[in-house]
Image 1 (cartoon, rainbow, N blue to C red):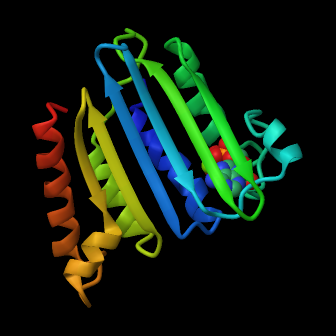
Image 2 (cartoon, protein in one colour):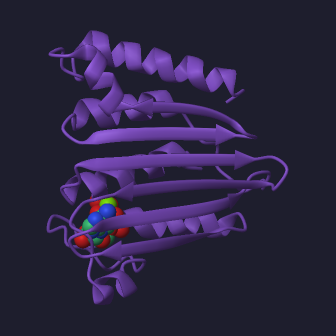
Length: 180
Ligand SMILES: Nc1ncnc2c1ncn2[C@@H]1O[C@H](COP(=O)(O)OP(=O)(O)OP(=O)(O)O)[C@@H](O)[C@H]1O
Ligand SMILES: [Mg+2]
């Protein structure tokens, strides 16, 4: 079973390819509502209404190296498999919002996986966009905002190894406080 963090990595890659300057990764876990939601929002190129209608179909892609676009359709399948679903809103020239929902306690729900490593992989691979990662669990919130981080770091680049390992540790500790 694929970890949900690997789907997040895939969906964020779409936002990066779409030239987004700002990418938000918002995860909500509510034990009371038995609900987990994962949202990836970007201000990239967006998609036309016609393209958006077809985008959950694995045969739809603008990539040229392989015939099938799998990222969105696999994420949707993972959500549907555990009593949830996937919504996409997109507007050309404005951006895209992808929101998946899952039954938190469903036995078919893949584990979230390692969000600290995932964010590190994303930021080190593509340090240009600004990232906001907000994770809420039963009312407690953890947040990593690269805009704020860059203000503190000044001229030190985000993709320096020391900075990346600090970010990984910061996320691990922050999530541990939320019992994640
Ligand atoms: N955030 C986004 N902004 C703009 N276009 C998007 C976005 N996400 C997806 N798309 C468009 O939808 C297509 C399908 O996306 P999907 O992730 O399913 O497949 P892919 O990225 O083409 O291939 P794969 O993810 O398997 O490498 C993409 O090729 C792209 O044209
Ligand atoms: Mg993709």
